[in-house]
Image (cartoon, rainbow, N blue to C red; front, side):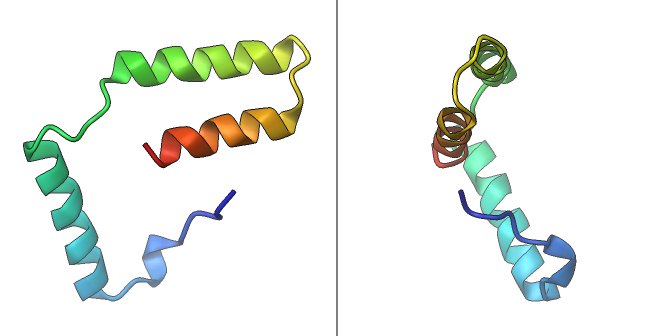
Length: 67
């Protein structure tokens, strides 16, 4: 899984560009409803609690981050 970047180390220009991209994504409907995210995370946690390997959970979360 890719390690998240520390936004505190970004230049002002990079931060502005990332915020602008996120804002434009939101305006264009490129969002995931909270209920969908909650349901997917609840499923992953339940699977971990029921003995699913951690590697499977990591791949699941990675898939959420890349969608």
